[in-house]
Image (tube, rainbow, N blue to C red; front, side):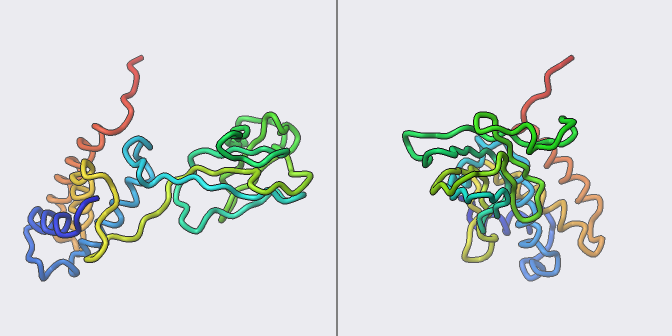
Length: 206
């Protein structure tokens, strides 16, 4: 966890503003925007504390299901049409459906041994093949969940080694409020990218 006071005090210092200007330059809002961006882009090994797995029930002839209330980012999913998923039965991993990769509908190629999931459905996801019967705990989702917003009583739940990333991005955003300091925004945007590169997979040279 990263304490609220550390995040706001360092952001204020870099922005060269007073603590009374915290709201004016939307510092807390910028910290939350930065946190949300990092949750969406960082490799899972750096945010493993906000990864959750949960089972869901397969319903006969139902292919569309809703995300959990705290869902933010899909990672993996498994199904078993014949048995419940538990510690002894992981199920079969669902392949993410990418329409451009196939020339036929998902429903025509999906099988129980090669199932698909479409995560582009608004508010949820679709699985194929269609369950032919109800199965309690027949599916399992692994996803990044969305923590409570950072505020005076809620620290960031990100690991402490991500503190600079949060602050650099927040300063970049806050420095552009009311066109306050575009030069500072550019500077910290560059700091953010350099720091982010320490956490992202390295591109292989060709």
